[in-house]
Amino acid sequence: MSDDLRARLMAASTAGEIIRVVYQCGSQPGTIREIVPLAVSDEEVVAHDVAAGIDKTFKLAYLQLAGAEGSARAYDPTGHVDDSRTLPVAIVSHLERLHALGWHVDVTDTCVSLHSRFKNGKLRKGADVAIMFNEFVIDAWDDGGGWREEGVKSKRPFYVSAPTFERARTFAHLSVALTLFLEEAAKHAPSSRV
Image 1: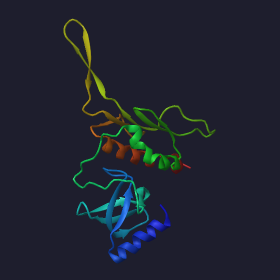
Image 2: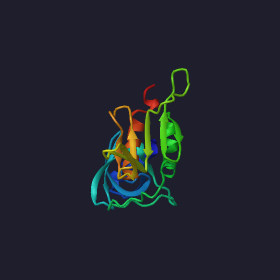
Image 3: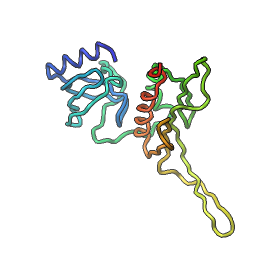
Image 4: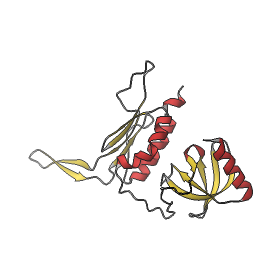
């Protein structure tokens, strides 16, 4: 978080001013929000979200001031999120932040995996944190004459794995899975282990 951002938030809280910010977390990461800062601490700002009409807490690490001509879309308080994006498209706006956290990022059509390095600098093969898309799941059953398998469309095709999870968590919507993925990426970041 920059000192400029914190100073701007504090000035707006004193004046009761509405400011435009881009929040890279939450249910709609990367959207522009209009907020009235109420209280600013070292790690977060409590602000009135104008579109939603309620007070919310925003983590400063994921917040930036919106430019005058930003290409980001506006926050939708009704919660309708465009989940038609593919995983590689959805992650693009977060790559710079992930690299700043010290991650090596591998991106494929169906997976984004974050890898740390050994002390000698070599890359770990296994992912520390990952988000995956599996459109189909295998449904298997015994029909009396042997096992049968059939691929069926998954109702929860997005998976997030992290060191603190006993097993991967599944989600129906990319936006929700991406929010958890980014939170886990920050929580387990190599830069925080130094």
